[in-house]
Length: 203
Image (cartoon, rainbow, N blue to C red; front, side, top):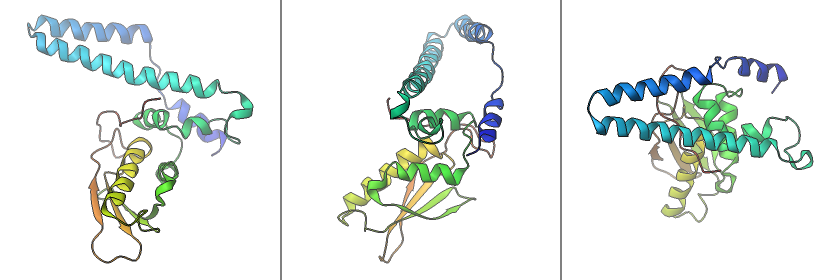
């Protein structure tokens, strides 16, 4: 990844006034309070708290990664540790700020669960289905092992590549249809759809 790509991705972030944003949130909560529906206000406050927890965890993770001594950081690109972290990556993808393309992010996701030996077969643009092959037969070759590989792929892809909405895993050399796992719609894809934050592991 070039330095220019990183700079362009950073510039894509809109300018935000923290004070005005905080006031806007308070105004929305106040309007909900005037409706006389305590359940609606409670739900809104819970949503705000959940989002603050999510972004707070992401910021804490970034600070932790950036404060790691130079000698212990991932060699090469100074942003490598950030782009390779599931929580940070999910935030960047959510806001369309991740500088890597989908193929690279899918590779990152599968690299994070490399113990399952999953290889990409192809990706269906229309359905969002990623087809994978398990060269080793999914570990011991039993159904439970295959389910574990699928779950691992689902969790990683939800963070790094939410454009993938379903996964098919086929053991190499086996006949029959591959098992289909529906992941669901991810956040803010480039197609213009919008959804909630992707699941992320706690830092």
